Image (cartoon, rainbow, N blue to C red; front, top):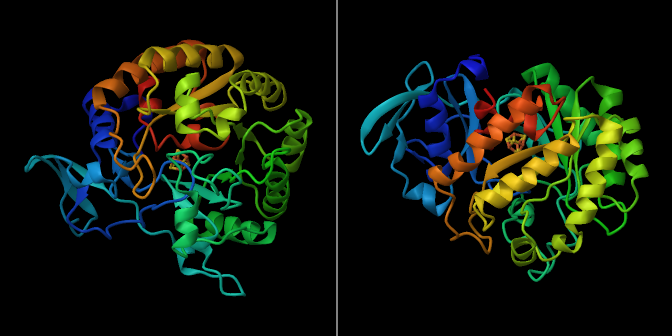
Length: 370
Ligand code: SF4
């Protein structure tokens, strides 16, 4: 695989453009199955450019109008990438993982329990329900956690035993290198930390796999010690938006957990997991200015938190389905200075033990760290 550091400026630019515009496919079923619905960024497909895997929107309305088109792959799996009809690059689609062919003894397909993300990440949403999603007044407007459940592509709750079984198979059959455990928010106390502990403990008993847990800040900081003791190596607590007005508008339920609480929780979590092992998602393009995102990122980096800034993907079926994706220019205006800040501060994607910041496929941020 090409080292991220050796990526050319042209490849870096192409990744940012593709993630903003999305991609049309001559063969929609090419490569590993795309993600539709679910928690976090979605409606996208893994694409390999210059040896680097990124997630590119393929099911959004802006992707349907994208100037980028992937031709049918040739015998070696390479696909010609065209811009306005002109061939500009060769890309690959990762193959379907082997563990997708398996199912549990009681008949649950493994890929309903966890899926392959990026190049080598196993990812699951432990609880596919969320107290905030039940009412559109409280739900995060970008989130599609209920869609894949309603469509029968996943199950509502993955048991620790199921997660351990699938994780072991994904390591043995497909060589996955780390795992993301995210969850809908089940209550207003531990906010998902408890179910992450149970899951991590079972997975670590079955297989040696670095784990990232993702949840809202729990009500008590001692959950950080518990999560670490259960086997979670790095932690994500996702701000999503950074300005109070954008938070209140886009994620009215989640915004009731104040920015002050997030910042306190980040400091307490870094004390447990270590500098650079705590991260947050910031979805650029939902209304925060570039200056606001960069200002918050500076505060986070000073705390030892990795700010994973990701282009917002307008997911079909959500209230923000027709909200425009951020332009490549906007993304570059954030990612270029942020990449330089991360490099100067020694907080690097590749040093994270597990999770989204390490995977990096939902943003081209990591390629701006060089
Ligand atoms: S960055 Fe996170 S959500 Fe995106 S593909 Fe990687 S593991 Fe999945």
